[in-house]
Length: 391
Image (cartoon, rainbow, N blue to C red; front, side):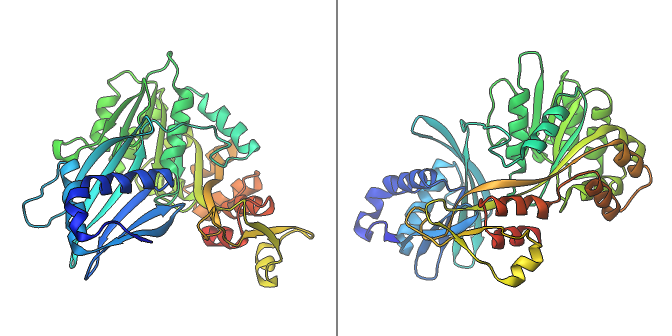
């Protein structure tokens, strides 16, 4: 941890200090920057690989100068009483465009600021880089070649859902197709795709925006999230009438997405004919390759996993490369449910999540626990990480 500047230098160096905060966060691969007031000072933390890391500390004067600079860059109010505010900053980092999404919120000690780092020009990899297995990639490749249908990605906040959808979109982005999106907000821009951010203040919600987009002659539509009954109904109708629709929904597993849509009022016969594929996913913290060691876990853990005999297990103990955290980078793990004839017939009966899950596993689906164990057995993640994400 380091002091950023002493008080006599703070006003003079405020611009450089804030630039340094931004640039260092990008270089370290942070997803978020937290600027937090304390009783007698402030701290700055970066979220790296899902974990917060304290990187700077300073006094109250420095906090005031940093907050003022961030607000000016984001074109936020700097004069009134503290109140929730949101804004954006666009910067250049090593010739790449980086968008910073700013959220300011008042607390009892001052205004707390969280800055989400969105790399506009970030390279889109392939499905293997997202953590899909060879068998899963073959299924997904087959599904997205279809001209119509509903493709869903589900999982908690921060599980990489948007990255998965945008990677699919990028693969489908050819001159013969018209691709449009509705997002909240537009996080990463892709050339030749019409991307729109929803704005409830002007009446542009996911549902209303989707209605308008259907008049824009799209082949492929991405809806950032299915949050309500109206959006769900329009998305399903679009999928039935010749469009490929990609979206996210918040459920714990793939089967839960089907139950959720039926509970939203989607008729089972429409859902059965429109839904093609669901991926439930989590982001797992990978073992640091530099300090990864083989070890013998407790019998209790091995019994929970029901691991095959002679399985080797690995964890990372921490080193300079991973800042002593024992993890470096994250990899997705996926439970994919391709809608078979059997699943279609089951949907018509308004099934429970457990019924769908049982049939899908019987047909060969790897559930999230099994997907996590694959990454334990190949040394990518630790047992503890697998259990943390799939309890």
